[in-house]
Length: 62
Ligand SMILES: [Zn+2]
Image 1 (cartoon, rainbow, N blue to C red):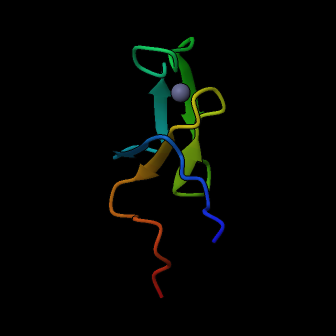
Image 2: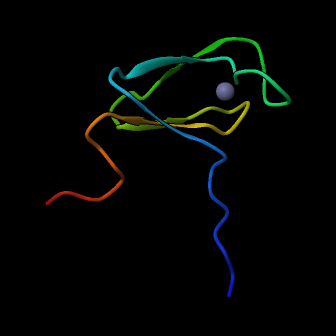
């Protein structure tokens, strides 16, 4: 069975613009701002952390 690799970290946030510096350790990187735009999630291009807007869990609401 092939496993889909998951992002190393999922962070729930309440605003569409988040800042990420990767935290401490090997994933640390310069502080950047990530804008979700019209979506409800954004992935940090540096550390692959996934930021999800609060209340949106990735399930598709109908
Ligand atoms: Zn990051």
